[in-house]
Image 1 (cartoon, helix red, strand yellow):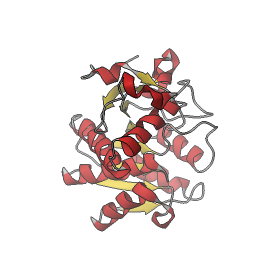
Image 2 (spheres, rainbow, N blue to C red):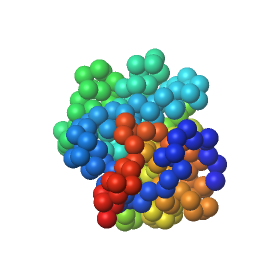
Image 3 (tube, rainbow, N blue to C red):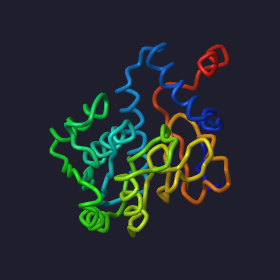
Image 4 (cartoon, rainbow, N blue to C red):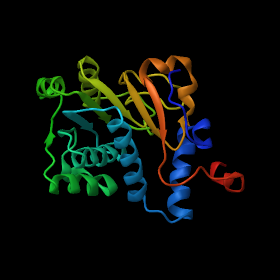
Amino acid sequence: MPAESHRNQDSLIALTREQVREVDRWAIDTLGLPGIALMENAGRGAAESLLRRGLTGPVCVVAGGGNNGGDGYVIARHLANAGIEVEILSLVPLDKLSGDAEINATVAANLQIPIRTLKLPEELELLRSRLETAEWIVDALLGTGLASNVRSPYLEAIRAINDSPASVFAVDVPSGLDCDTGLPLGIAVRANRTVTFVALKKGFLNPEASRWLGEIEVAGIGVPIPSDRDRSAYA
């Protein structure tokens, strides 16, 4: 499995979907770190990873409606701050977002980062045309919580990403890839690079997963994995 050299012990651990959720709950409920701070840390780390690739732009961030999409809005902001031309293509209108994703989408909009909401499959050709102009596509559609087969409009968006000539950067996990098994849930984004948060995911250890993951880097979210005395979080 292609992989970057990892910089801390956490990156040698592989977590299941439920364990990832427990780390988030532990950070928020036990440590008192707000979820929006975790999202900021994750998105900034992912943006820095992409900037280290020496990109010049333009970049298309394709965002869904959950926290993975929220990460995408953070990434777009940090890329724009670095002078990279970036456009956000959202499958969900901003007024339908909630929580931390809504906050970060509002910040991006207030900074006048271009945001285009696309209705799929009706506007599929428009999506394809925008992706064709990109140097990199940031896949921020679906995260580790996905446990059933991909459905419309995400199905059409993933197909368009895979058909694009641009390089693809997956946020946490390639959209559609089951993080526990490392296999597609019907379809999955084929990434050139995946930046995953906290630790590797269990499914990444499946040799088959390398077909979708590309190069892998682990980025922190501002907290460690709970120590042995906190393992009750995984009970």
